[in-house]
Amino acid sequence: MAIFRIKLSLILTYFVFAILLNSVGTVILQVIHSYQISKEAASVLEGFKDIPIAVVSFLIAAWLPRLGYKNAMLIGVALLFAGCLAMPLLPSFLTTKLLFLLVGAGFALVKVSVYASIGVVTSNQAQHASLLNTIEGCFMLGVLSGYWIFAYFMDPLQPASAGWLEVYWWLAALAAINLLLLLSTPFPRLVLPSVTHAAEDFFDMLRLVYRPLVFVFVMSAFLYVLMEQGIGSWLPTFNNQVLGLPNQLSVQLTSIFAASLALGRLLAGQLLKTLNWYGLLNGCLIGMAVLILLTLPLTKNVVLAAELNLLNAPLAAYLFPLIGLFMAPVYPVINSVILSALPQTKHAAMTGLIVVFSALGGTTGSIITGFTFARFSGQTAFYLTLLPLSLLALSLYWLRRLRQHTPVS
Image (cartoon, rainbow, N blue to C red; front, side, top):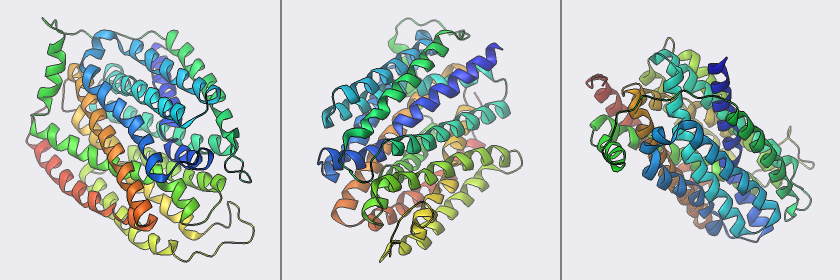
């Protein structure tokens, strides 16, 4: 029962953060309309989310086992709760930046704690990979829910209306429920080696980067998140300004991307029982490239139906988000590969590095996509995804080679 409550706590915590973290694309679209913000200015919202994730993870990830994973998650959810309350009470672009700053800092605490806790409640690599894929799949279900929750509060007839801010009252209530569940759930404590100075944990984390396997892994994570966030953050705006869809419908159709990611991760959990991870991921990268090259030409000279709805949008609006199905397995699989190669006491430090480089990749991807979108076109911005995709294929090759020749220790 205790293990079940811990797993439920981890899943709900991740679910709540999934809604807020991946609302950046929706919020970018809304602040452009509500606060008359340019695309270049709106693109910094990804940075306000990701930079705190990187900084907080870098500074305290290795110390979290001593703080306690439960305490860290309580602080993280409390920060999210405060940010949600601020949005409807103090509506402005500055408050929006503050929200993502708090959510980013909170997620740094939460992701390290969730990933590290998986090692505490599982006993072998198979269980670790299974639970990690399940939690990541539930994360994507949270992302999917978020698109529809936000869309419900948006007025398609008045894009500049501030009514969409009401969604944050409901998200604050969900965060409060999450806090109560965490408070009532007992977490086991890790047996940790004693240290002379607190800084020793921090430098142990830095020393991990000097391992060739870890270095190649963090580059792989950076490239993957650069692609995922570049597409995910700008897909609602792409649907709105390139395909000409209303803002509410643009967000609703973006949910196909989140649904594809969720389905892809849940399917990968089953496929990996019989398929080699390297072969599966290479097949996924090929699928992504083919989908980009075949669907983006369909986004030019689009003719819209007289009365647009979910069933008669342009074909590209349904096809391109399916790229998430191929992207889905990459992130949890490479995370499991690296974490299973390290002892449990190193999982928090390694997760800190995962979060840091993922955050940097997300910010880089969103800003590059935003500037390319504004200066050239949405199609050009998404075609550029082929470059990091090619580099990721190369980094996965080296990750496999190094993993084969690196003993688990």
